[in-house]
Length: 359
Image (cartoon, rainbow, N blue to C red):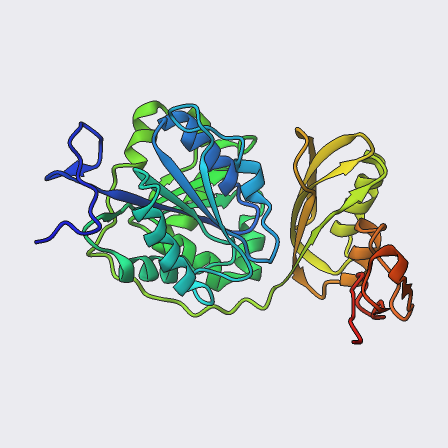
């Protein structure tokens, strides 16, 4: 057998078998707002392994990659973050996903590739797509699904196909955001999960309380090749919208905006997230169903926001968050050549400045 494309390992690097260095792939799934990105940051800190992270954002604007960019690997260097946007790796972007995995394996060659799919991705399809590109340098680990304990029942009711698929396909299931729940509530939720997937390891205690051996075991458990992957059909009709160059005057204005989001002013928004400058401060916001949180963050290179739901009122979102860019539908503003711009008009109805050449 030739050695073309293989990384030969002469040291004691974990993941080396018969002289060949394997890239191990761990998929961390979970519905919108379950806390996947937060878990990945903790995974990098607790295991101190050589990581690369592939982020798959549902919309055209990637938010989580920026939040992960400050996380360091075992050597103290920032994590390698790869982003795939405008589609889901379980369906529309699966060819790009395959190409990206092979590119990562053959260039930066990390010991572990952590894949964070979009929250509305079918985990069974994602694992099926990874199986198709598996070869001797890629080793698949048992996937993890993170469940939002606060919104588990609502998610299961609104999006049963996606949620059940993410539970059924997982080897390990973690329950987040249930720190205040009593023992009986935890038992009831665990029973609901085991009714869907009786073979999975279910952790109802928050992962931050688990010991180092538990964390390291997540990176050792192989994919159960004997487990049949019943691929479900994707049935989500969710819309998404991503915005950059967003800003608000102050924190109070952000609070008022988020209150409008959860009350339906901007459409039926199930998930929203982003970071922006509000006055002099940089703030991060998260919305899941009807609850929102705001936290302070270090300054970012660019402000971004993403909204996922149905019946999104796109122009209204632009009007509130992009005041410096927004032009009301129906208005036409001439563009001056003296300012070095193209000849034409700003197209009404789009809500954004566009240059239209008429030559």
